[in-house]
Length: 201
View 1 (cartoon, rainbow, N blue to C red):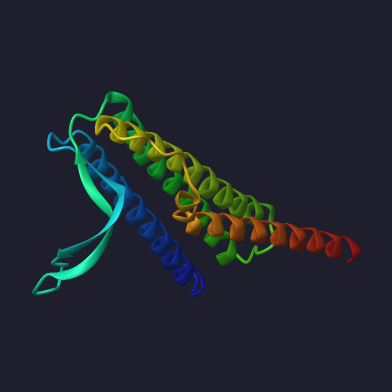
View 2 (cartoon, rainbow, N blue to C red):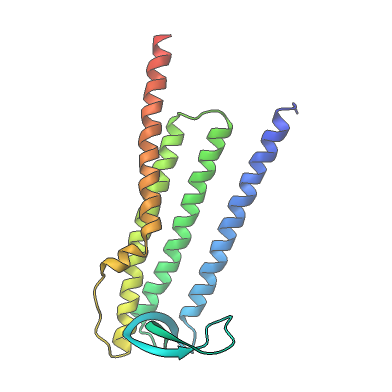
């Protein structure tokens, strides 16, 4: 093994280790979330409430202090099968989206380590990252919204359709997908310029 090959192999093994660790972490989170869906005590949901002044002791405080209540975490027992199915679907979508994104990022890192910055694989990997993040965010948002609808119906409440605040909650996903898409376009342009330049030599 040459002197240059040893660090390259070590870097590749590091990438594989971090990718496996990330996948294992998300898989564990998915299992915990799915098990929680079938908890006899009920599934916790964060629901909006009419703003009201309350005195509560927040974590880290030694005495109650006046606060304004805007949301409440409510356990909903006896969630119907449709609501449970949407929650399980949401968790599985997060798992699949994360696995695909991590695999694409590993491919991207390997291409960069090999010195192939402007290549078809780099462009494809960035496109996969952006598309996967966007699709996962949209599908998870819809699944969670349908599960919340089931929870509110179980509590005898009127369901409110998705609002702008629901979209804002996924702002990091929208931004990440946009950035990945812009980078994919930039690297595709760089690839074309490199190909044209090589053709002139």
